[in-house]
Image (cartoon, rainbow, N blue to C red; front, side, top):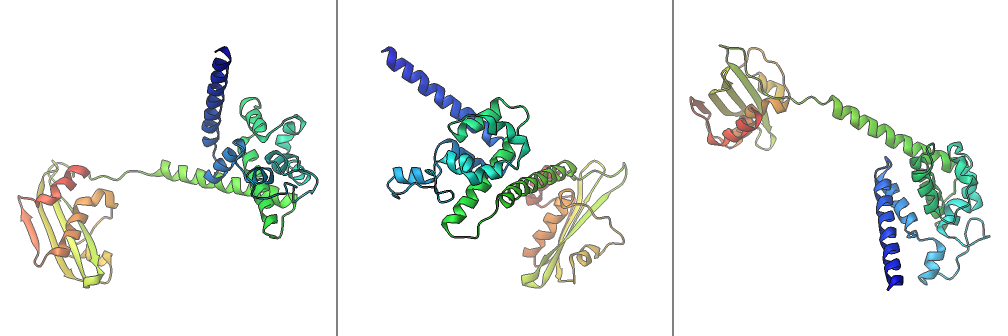
Length: 283
């Protein structure tokens, strides 16, 4: 009974550890394919030769690179002479090379839980690049030098980080555009144009609203196709100010609505029923 309880406690602890590991790996800012790769590494799921022999896929587990040891995950990514040459180029991970470990998983845990100076993202991309280069040998692709593998890994990480920063800048710089009422006692006219190339036609949409956001009049009209959207928007106007589509949704809706009209649809003191949800959304 006590033995069974101990086994259950160990199994529960192992499950919790792997769950924590997965959470830690998935939070890293590297491409998803590298997160998945590192997860396979830590679960002994890479198709190294020892795993393939165990599954009776091949008979010989000898490393194709050094021909001096069996190709385990630890050998392929860490202890193979070629892998050692690659890792020696990354000075920030020098501390790892002083450790006595039995698996790459132990290295990952050390970086995540013990070290305060080493970067798991750098470790991940270098390990991935070593694995990619090792795979190329199986297909007789021209192999890279340790220096080429190392710099390819760092270039990949830098490109990913740059793209991530750019996305954040774009997200932070985005300013929502919404319709705003005019000053007291003034009416505001919004208009938009839409092109229906398959019909060689276009539509214009106009909506007039008061300073209290009350719609006064709307217009949907189908016309012959002008040369551009700007020409459509300039029709029947003396001057105009361009605003983003988010702030002009009602007029855009009316312009698109003109596609199905045979004659102009003008409303005074009443609204087309299908535009009410649009006004409710943008106001």
